[in-house]
Length: 620
Image (cartoon, rainbow, N blue to C red; front, side, top):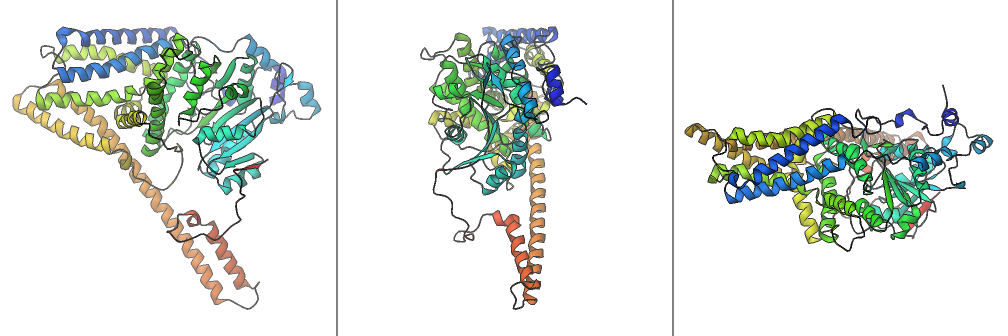
């Protein structure tokens, strides 16, 4: 079997692991983004959007004022974003890997040096060169309370990335266990006593210690693949490239939430981000990215005034004239949210950052040093989450007709006519999604329809300048009911269910079937599906919590029995079997999960080694 070194000699452009090939069935790496089928579907979907918009805006079709305005506002947001997204997708044929990239990649390593050092089978030791000059690369892994196994998996993979580099664990959770893990694996460890600036502050603090020409950033739950640097560093041979972003690919499509959240991002990473390359508007997504150190230094470091530091940093770099590159090659695999709580907190943070740009840093302003294409792309980014609020407006339309006989469209328009135009808008988009994802993902429809309370709250946060707390996406912790994070959805479901019953009764007594009944019933079913999803998650979470409690109780009983036996056998000698039993009991207590559990007020843990009075701790 050919080794990594053998393949490098045969073809320096090849990566060192076949797993680096994208795992998606329709990846832009393997299939032309502008295939005839895709272009045809996009054009048909765009035509359907235009026809539907013309139908809505026709004065002859106008109904009662309030529901008509709700429909127009909601559909305008959806139509505008759909058209802009399709325009971006059709722009995705440009390949960022040009002659300069391939020339640099072929000369990234000195083969004679590798042989002289005896590192043929240790690619993580291979010195990388750019223009015959050795380059230094730092790999940052940001952590904040993730479980040790997750961190271990990521750090182990980072240490094995091809190309000489320094791996740093940036621990904002200030965990001694993480510190010991980093020492065990051979990674450098950094901790801060404060968490100012959240993730951005953590990275900036590490930059004050690291000295690399480039630095890569990975969240603790994203496992990098060996060829990450091999596939990204050569782009920096072009001197105005500020960063290279790779996609977020997920490996935990295990339930409705994780599949919905993951597939919602799939089209963006496969088709939209590549299209943004054409406009020099591809932005950072916070992980699986490598920066040019001098570019970040030029803007004063990673942006710290927002929890969406990634897109803000990208915007600052673009305003300074830097170029950015996105490649749709899977070079790291991570976790998408698996619970209602994790999904809610992630979307709230992302949406708040987008709305902050819209309200405080309007990309269309003359003050922005951006091209027109960049202005449009950042405007789409800043207003994207308005598409998540639009379903709220549409949810209110059927009840207005059911309770108050207020219709958004003229009553002379038959349901069949309206459905025909509506189908041209939505059915063609579903077909487009079917093509790009390989199937229709009902989980995406579910989450897109029920997430409006999150985005309304994010908009309020941005308007009121509320500080948004940082939360770890995949963090495992104590059980919390999913219904605690979806009170508005529960109330809306109850309201729509009652409204459906009222509409059905009115239809039964009048003998006239209305479109409002069908529309409202559909919304009720969708929200009901979310209720069922949350109920199943809650049942599973309670079962896991009970299992942990039983395991802890069994462990505690074993410790107590052992301690009791030791007391009965206590002898004078400090090293008697009884004393050893007591020592063993204390060790078991120290290893118990309860040792890390919160203690009641006034109860202190046994004193341990005093922390060093410094604002950071570094281990190399």
